[in-house]
Image (cartoon, rainbow, N blue to C red; front, side, top):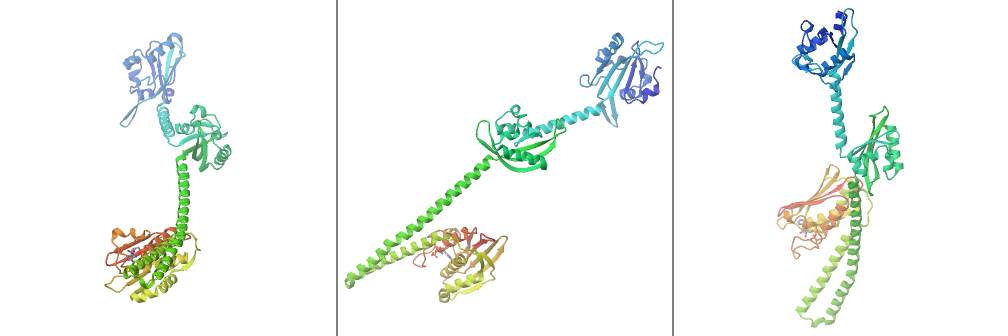
Length: 494
Ligand code: ADP
């Protein structure tokens, strides 16, 4: 043998030598193992005798070229996959071997004709790695391409390297037209965009910057930009990975909302101004009606029949009630206008004051009053006084004829808000009427039985809601009602 057997067996590649009679003259352990044919069986036979499938193969043609023209052939795995039927056996797993094969002439040893060397390398792990890398790359590319957010990579000079379809839609420009162009030029304020890119490269991360960009067909798009520095794909230089989320709809909705709320505020202000002026001006002619009715009545004097006296009384009473309604309306329209001072208010004192104001009604009705522990809160003192006076006043007014009134005023602190209540054992309110009770001039009882105009609870509701709280009633008809109202903790409180 012209090469040491030990030497070729120690190689980490397959070695086959074909003599000029086309018979195998060397077959190393590597190839014996992977071809699953040992040297004893292979030596002296042709390749086709061992592997009939090789008949007419490119490998045999390459071997012939060596003998006839002395020309080598390199068979890379890309163009000549699995030249020889080689396998790797690991336990029960049998895997084909990806190969790169070199076929070349071997110098003739003394006394022998020329030979052909077939050298086989195992590329299986490289091919596997390559396949895996391709899969990962394709997966990442799909994520990039499919993202609903516009994505772009930008190099250190601020030029766009790569863009996804969403970025093209956002800008109205093609990917080819964008690549190599300055990223910042897409934006309405190039300076702002430059500052963003500069900062992102400096800090390696940049979050939620809102910028506006120009669409190729005109119009602006508002975007939320996020960026991170990542290694570049083509060179070693880092690049900027930027995502741009189109928030034009959100911004437009916010603007519309702000516009609507401005309009609402304006129309509310107009409405209260109207209510104020109207009620103010209405009182004047009303006063004239009442005073002239009085004059006429006096002029007619004793000659007035009982019927006419009664009619006059109705007319005067009507005018008086109308005046009361107008005054109430005026009162209602004023709530929330003169923004009172917020101060630390001892609610126990406020309740006490309202009880003093209602002293007569309390004594008359022999009501029992129970006042629980009440806190000191940030509020407008007068507004609180009106609230308690209205609610306790109602509790006295709508008492049951079957029992003495018992009224309880209490408090419970509920996460983030103060909640007060006024409970009575009066006539109660039917569940389906409880919302109506808070409407303007809404009364749930016959006017001749209970005095009132139906504005008290409407005023309470306006005060409470103006300060960001809620007011509601829980009641059992015939048993009693509990009115609750809340005051948010902090500066918004009444
Ligand atoms: P008014 O007392 O002048 O009628 P309010 O706005 O204070 O006006 O109350 C509206 C209606 O709600 C009242 O007419 C009455 O029917 C009902 N109401 C209010 N408070 C109570 C109460 N504590 N118990 C039963 N009904 C009540």
